[in-house]
Image (tube, rainbow, N blue to C red):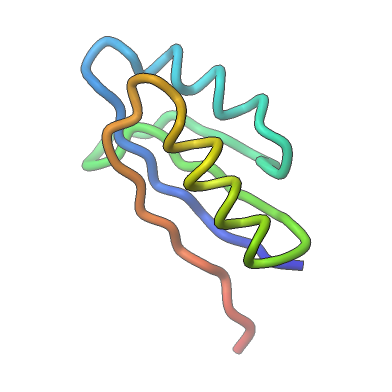
Amino acid sequence: MVKAYSLISAEPGKTAEVFERVKQIEGVKLAEAVAGPYDIVARIEVDSLEKLTKTVFGEIRGIPGVTNTTTLIVVEL
């Protein structure tokens, strides 16, 4: 299982629309709108790094209004 957080920036006025689309993506376990340098934080849980790549680059970045993402992969210590 691969777990990650995607920090998402949206165009002004598009945050609510992007938020609703992100919540519907398979593998997104939690999405929250936040204040600060990013607009949305999504927790993603998928079976492989390949699936994570498809989720971030194919799904999240493909949403109209998304301007930037930063992805943080969870590691075990």
